[in-house]
Length: 269
Image (cartoon, rainbow, N blue to C red):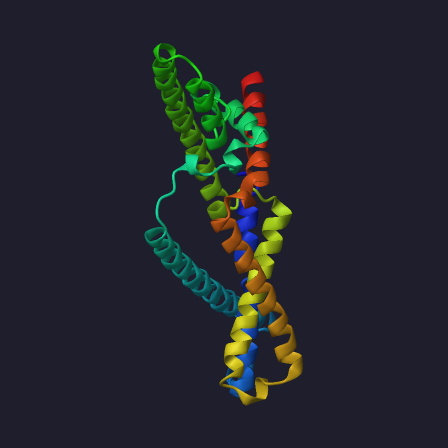
């Protein structure tokens, strides 16, 4: 993520909190008619001051709601992820016959990023290749076959260790992609921030509708259900990105390419 955009993104995220906050005030006004009559009756406050106070209250309430929802989703995701890691047995990277960390495009950009620290880029020795080579060695005389078997097993062990090194780097950037969302541009971040505030608003409307009968109207509930479906779709997409490592392959390639280009530009300067 470009650091020059970061303040604008965070500012927009908090500013958009006015949306659920303002809706919360309207719902309270609907539940308690005349609740704010005393406020609007204050003669010593001008309309600009009143409007500013309303926006401030909506800002505080809205960001409280979005912060609560974010914390709740984080707690659920953390508990679920921890449970999955505890239940799921460890599977070594060499057990996967096909894996995203063996993609040649990804390895190329990572090698440029790491330089001399990059693991050896060797082709993964699959079980089929290993079996074929053992079969070929079996045709050799015993005097030549024993050293060949030892050399083959050593080569396979080294190959799997190098494959595990690539897998660790892939897991590192996979976690960054799903936690920091560093692969998305400014427009996507702003759109995501706006969507999350609308989704928070929808959840608040639906929960409030269970307590406030006058809120159970189709013109309130239909948009709320629509944003709820969008909320579920986004969360499901996030679940897929977290559990399926192939989901972040393209984002990692784009991010590493930009990062490498930035390093090369700095070196030339």
